[in-house]
Image (cartoon, rainbow, N blue to C red; front, side, top):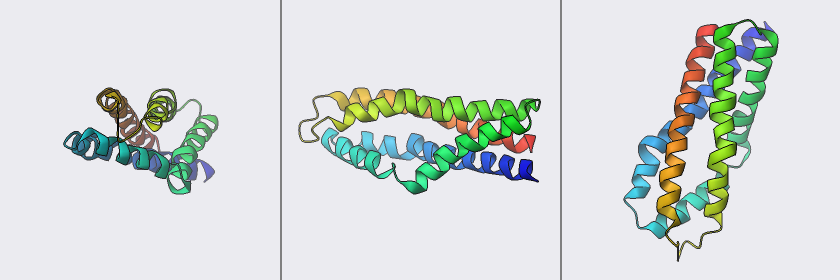
Length: 147
């Protein structure tokens, strides 16, 4: 029973987070590319503040915990272990190691005088966002299949 609940939370959480990342890859970042640099900087700075709140963090961090629990409860289930690793390393890990440092650097940019960092930021951030999107959606698929 506990295993089913944990597997479901891990799968659904991975899918939800992957969906958020997917929307950024296919709609939000391409829309920002159509805006003046200062607008892209200002809006992304606002998003980076807004996202760090309970609704997103509960799902984002809770899914890490569910994935770890999933592995602990069924360490020989290859699909479940690979799915959990995809989320923890590809979703959470890439975010913390690559996207968050870019966000922190963007936070220091003056939106009224963006200094050219936006094009570097948008390109690198979006590349790593694609990676974490694929990792999270792959994790959701594998965790669902394992359940």
